Image (tube, rainbow, N blue to C red; front, side):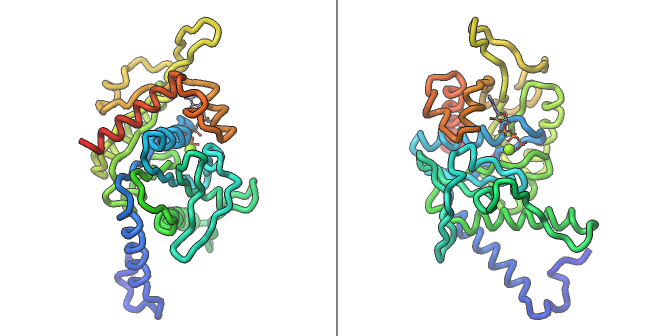
Length: 293
Ligand SMILES: Nc1ncnc2c1ncn2[C@@H]1O[C@H](COP(=O)(O)OP(=O)(O)OP(=O)(O)O)[C@@H](O)[C@H]1O
Ligand SMILES: [Mg+2]
């Protein structure tokens, strides 16, 4: 298949110039970011977005300047989870100002760009056959613009919340060649572990992106009446032998965490002593240690 580089003429569009300018804009923006971290999982619904929101808050509480990219273009949830859905984006000559949470975490999300609550993102294609190719190239294009057109300022951390699927990381790794690392999220079910192991292989063996660690979410449930820890899923294999990677920790299921996500309030701010909050703060420390060592 020919690429744009093989075209005998660009019909005056200066396509190579345009692509080079895009790459330069992205690199310039990333130059003010110290560490980039992708939160990923091959499996859907395991808690990537709520983990991203809470880790961003934890890193902010630890004194870092933190930006978040909701890289789930079709199913953006972070504006709601981080309580900034009503924010109006301000456009300046150097980019768009991100939404800012009460604690000062910055966020850009497709959700902030859609006019109506129930408006889906629709990728136009000339024919149905083209739709898949268009969708993936337009998703990458949207992501590139999110990162490069946002006025992030100086950031200690830029977290990217990826949509479910093992195939999403290659796009991000292509956009951010020096991606600092990935946090891989699973739940303690064999079905989840089966899929999430593929995410580990993709990151480590295929893309050579460092794995900061594996997070086990919804690890157990603490009975509100007797205080006993009850398992929620059935995986028998311990996390470290299942993944053979650094383990960042196990987060219990806490209905208050789900409620905070729905309400867009800060779980860590409201319940700093909850077991899940303590684990989340420890995870933020481990992420900092990963980059400091
Ligand atoms: N530890 C937890 N305790 C209670 N609720 C949780 C926990 N983790 C996640 N949830 C809830 O589970 C639901 C799914 O979480 P979330 O949207 O973060 O998953 P996801 O992996 O980002 O999903 P998707 O694959 O669709 O992007 C949300 O309602 C969230 O609030
Ligand atoms: Mg999500």
